[in-house]
Length: 194
Image (cartoon, rainbow, N blue to C red; front, side, top):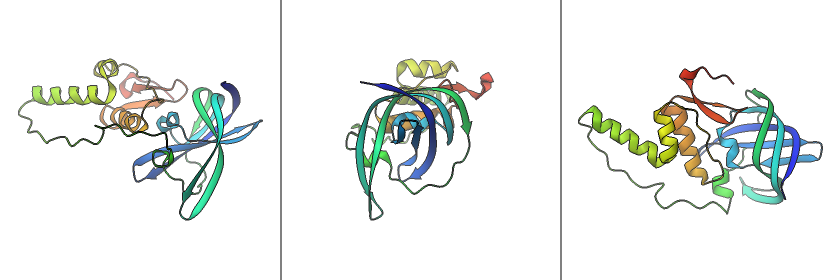
């Protein structure tokens, strides 16, 4: 049964062999817990205060760099922020990417499919290619929002590899920025603030 905890989530961004990922320490009056859910991957490094819905607590262990680590994890499914202070946090020990260590992760069959290079003959072909990429990564509904420069809220509960591709597409290719208090991506041109 989910519980709501108030506290501070300290998020650290780490670069691993699969790209950047985020991990967090949830500091509450009830205790301190590790958070390694994909919902964190869209946040910048920083300290976030608010309420956190935790679906479950569980023990997890992994081996990295010759050491075995056991930790109590909180599976966070929803975040409601009252304050967000983005910025670099203290250096912490290196951690493995949750995509590698989580046994629940299932790689979709086509996520690493080789796409043949195409020679773009005109702007119309290029627009069709961009439209196809938007639909492939975001899905039809979110792709339509992106084409119309509308705010987008991603679902972090699906495949983590796809979620990271969505974040990269919005941030690097489409010029969106993540507004942490809303947990929504906005086009930079709309003037949305953090």
